[in-house]
Image 1 (cartoon, rainbow, N blue to C red):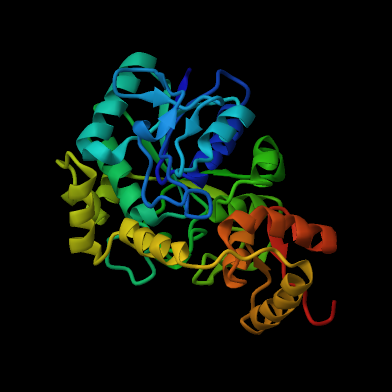
Image 2: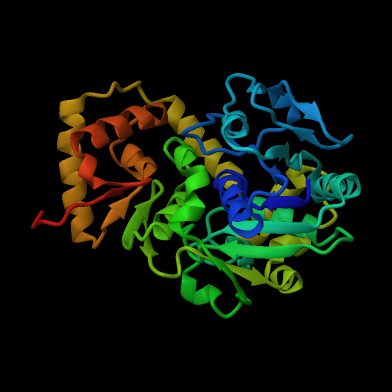
Length: 365
């Protein structure tokens, strides 16, 4: 294993890490991708990140690091995309365990560096919210990125911070990021996406989905998340920039504050104090609300009628594309129906599927 890639925010960052490895390092030995098991409530109804105790079938790589092989399984009611990623991609997926705070992840990184002696270590963030100061009104999920950033800055090894798809996570506008971005490292192409194209057919990541779509040439405005955040799909979408690690730490108030934390509770407390909230609190509140919602079956006729109204409203907002997560939540469907909804829409209007996004037709089409 020549390469270690740390997926800063987990979820789709792990998929983007596989794209990055293919683009920068080609067919050499595969990477160890260190990532959170932290999927949104569409996949995992339990708020927050999963730890080793939430899985069966993990394998020890070092005393503090366990890998998630294809045969691993999350323990119900938890859910995770990692075993399926391990089954479909050639890399080794190692589990970030944030329950021991930044100190614990620093220990994980140090053990991996000692074991692997990697030729390179990349810390990868899709979207760029790892560069947030903490008080931005559009910031939604600062915690995971801040923890990995703080840990990487503690490790006595050269680590390169890479930001892919500036602004694609809908959290920091590209204009706010440009002054911090360093040299351009790569611009993803459709060929770079080929390795993960089958994964993107089922993986719920919106930011990495838009990263892949822009690499394939999709342009416009994409609406994402339950809040319907508008994200521009431009030529900047498929780019990857290097950012000075120390400069990122100097910007990120939360990362600086949590350096000595030994528990996730401590990290959350700092997050509430600095950012005004914890994203895990948001998940807790949303999970409690979802639990009280009556189950809804997928009624194709009703769904397609609702979709027409949603698209008419989206057109008026200047939206050209959306994600299947956004449609699922906008139509008030249970997250478990996301894949059924996706299949229904693609079979009904295959010409409007611009993988992995859904194209909102113009009134002239």
